[in-house]
Length: 140
Image (cartoon, rainbow, N blue to C red):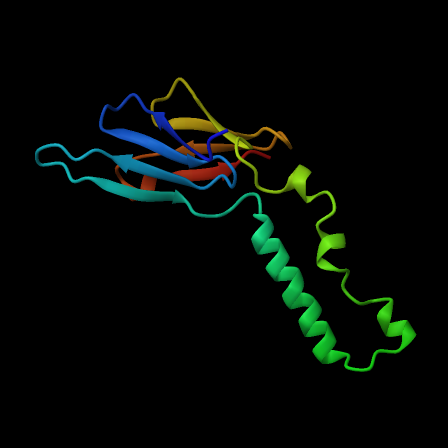
């Protein structure tokens, strides 16, 4: 399955680029004549973490705990962070993976619904040439 997918809009000059593993989205504008070619961030927040990032975060957590507890007592060891491999149990189900996020057009040419197909979480994705009118907002 592809990680990056292009979604057409009703505007022939504008498409959306979705990172289907993390939910990051960019607005692509084709340059023709007086129009500039642009790649604009709609959302650069990862909505699902990549394994490499989770591994590094847990490794740093363990390292920091060991520095703060050089000679831990048995009681302190009970509060030690779990190993990276133990921490990642179940990650393959809830972490970033190709195809996890999909965009669906709506009746409004500027709006799409993004769905996390694993958890069912949804977002309104609104593209626009006007930066102040761009939105990526979770439905609650």
